[in-house]
Image 1 (cartoon, rainbow, N blue to C red):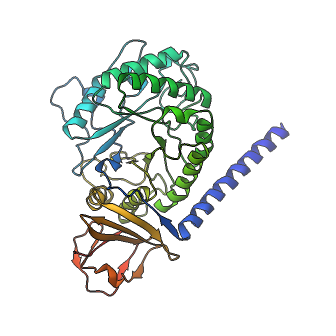
Image 2: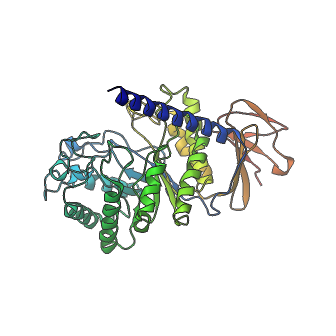
Image 3: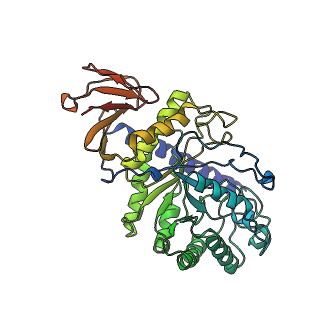
Length: 427
């Protein structure tokens, strides 16, 4: 008994040391200078992904003309990851061979109306085919276990891909498989399921894209490494990851993305796109201020693109439980400053090319972009209030703080802080 307690205590100590190292490592990454080289292509609108859970109420789907619980955002939502939308395997096939596509069909119709690209994420295992049907998981018993028969998985993937052909072009294999509450099977079993899903989906829609199971940071790196070593990378077009770094600021994502890229390089798939399929802030709670929340959201999108992420899905538009950084008011009808920032940062970035994004020793970040051959810059300081003097070569005419209107710049310096500011030459 003493030996068991000692082992448990040592395990807790090791976990604490790991988390301490992670936080320390993130702070070092934030504090030191960084030079990021973004993709030298225009930033597409689809880069700005989002989660939203309550556009459709499954309890009222039979009633025509009833408005969704959450109104469609007043700002563009170019990409939508379908998770927490009640379209999991358990929702679609609650009993073997009995399919319920009403919520999914309404969801896809809503996306079409708003010209929004969708990514459908597979999982959870229905209890009727779960290998461990009484095992605890996040949503229902057995949901995290592998199916008893791989043929049940095959039928599910084939039926959904056939039903969604022409409407869904991106399929993600599983959500956060490194967490037992989401996946309690082995890595090998997930590789087998990914292989089967790849072959089935590609046979139905050769143009469809397959996103790998997306681990949750920070301890998802070993899982991703094992998945790729077992050959999982051969069956996906895109590597997905959930780049959560809370409670650290967005710039901490740089260290995590570097680790992901290192694993990809070690397994010979560094040429494949890397997507951040879910991230946001759950801590600190409550979040310090709405102004800082808007700054974090904007900086997260900037840093993700600057560090080579091809698409970033924020979590979440209308969640008010687990998350601490809200984009909408409690009734989901009004926009918080962070919700407004989601629209503004798209205006700043979509269609622009980012040449470089870098920080100095004082943690002042400068990102250089151009649109239609007209240069502009985005500047902020991670630590807080600071004075910044733009070089004369920038020929600054106006500055636009996030969520504010442009104003003339007379120089020579301007106060900056955690909120990004747009410097425009006007030329």
